[in-house]
Amino acid sequence: MLTQNRAGPHHPPDTTAQPCNGRAGIDAGRQLIVRVLSVRSRRAMRFMLLIYTDENLLNALPSGEFDRLMRDCLQHADELRAAGKLIDSQQLEIAASARSLRQRGERIAVVDGPFAETKELLAGFNLIEAADMDEALRIAAEFPWTRTGSIEVRPVRDLDSVRRRVSA
Image (tube, rainbow, N blue to C red; front, side, top):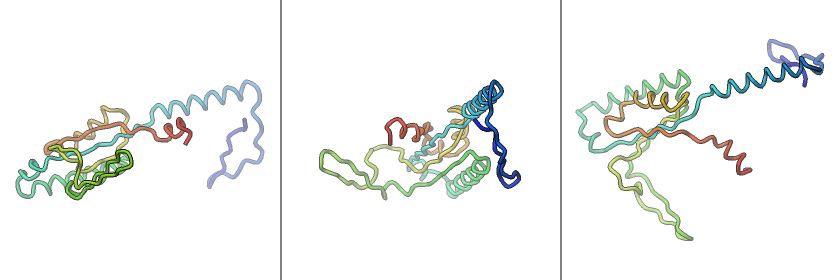
């Protein structure tokens, strides 16, 4: 193990780095491992907020209300992004513009619209970071769309760990 090299714009490269020997080197290594593990345990989890809306409820809103809700939603998303909580968000086009694919054996079927017959349709998503499910639920509750549908809060699986598991 070598001592820390602080090369960078404010620190010239340390060309005199010496191996850490003995007990001091082992203790320094253990302290580094503890710091790394404590940072990892505090690291935020990612959650997908899937926003579903009921077209009948949206259509029943008073004139101008949807635009007001959307404006408030976008302002709130900007605040979350500035705070480092919002990673990405998108609004989807209407469900009638969707196509669904399904393969059974060698046959691929393409149908117009969403495949599931449901009252509430997927309208958009927000990808957020939160400490835990409780914080993710609090963030989701700050959006207005539970009035016209629902917001599903789902943890995002760590794809890098899946890659390692399946050797991809």
